[in-house]
Image 1 (tube, rainbow, N blue to C red):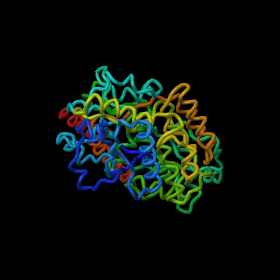
Image 2 (tube, rainbow, N blue to C red):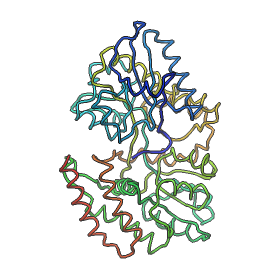
Image 3 (cartoon, rainbow, N blue to C red):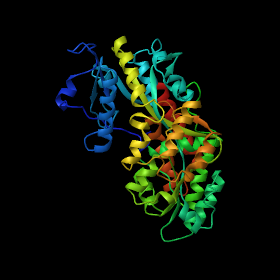
Image 4 (tube, one colour):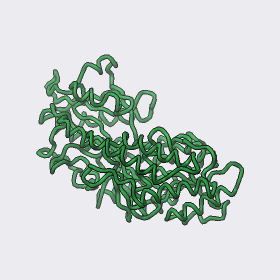
Length: 447
């Protein structure tokens, strides 16, 4: 599932939309004798600042590498699930193309990804990237992609409401029992205040069920990817907690079938105590929904076991030549993978243009590279970084788990389970999990 602040949309630099549909990424040499690469995920013209940053960085790269011609392509969104496979199969995919973590294995399975293993040593940053993120693009010991960003889910909460409810805003809930207690106290403030909100529509309920199941130590699918593992004590614990907060405590409000925008609107208006999200929600809450940075904090996923991680990266067309692969890896290093620099990491530039600097993610690097990236970020921070310390510290103790295979199909099934619990007081949790397990087994069997 997507997070909400990292996704980038794309536009073609100086080329018409019609030309876009006609050009894939298989021409090694341009007219000037340069190695030509097509890439995607450039911000649209409507995102003026990001667009300008991207163009500036591409121009700087081409100046440093005069033998490489970079042709960015437009896409909205960066990856459209409705056209992604068709574009791959039709040979219209860019030489260097954007993917969600959940699509990496699929692209390899349908034989549309170039094997980067012989070239990855030329990517200067590769050894500095988090291994768990690199592993997402590694299949049977071969490297097929490079991670660009990563996010993990946590508990976003309103410090002002915590104080009003007599809770310590510097000691956020660490267990689901503590979440339940805090939610009840916050809802007790009245005036339409909701203690805890959760999604239950548009596949987002299934996404959050998965995150909550991970937090309880459970899994959605078995390790071999062949059987559902939701009909378990951990699965029942997730649903029982939601049921009790909704019906016993009345801490989740009467309006259900919520999606992410609903929770963001409630949090931004000061009417919501807590919801699960990634840190990139925070600037949206402030800039679009009316919240104040000082009031919004984030804690690690309750439960202390695990959290759901997601993100994106780039893969290379199986038709890309060795020269294009080498050029593309250089471009990735320049644009995204240099600590404190590039399109996502130039914190001084971002601060100058009033973009938020100091959010706790994405945390892409390790060791000295991570230390350098964090040093530059902190030096340019313009948000209250102390509000995010619990998240940073707590995440170090959690297992990071990616979304299950066939995630969107599975989430659709689990949406029905979560929505039933939140809209029907007498929902049969055991029956719901048993039925969902059978449907997920069917999805897995179809492959």
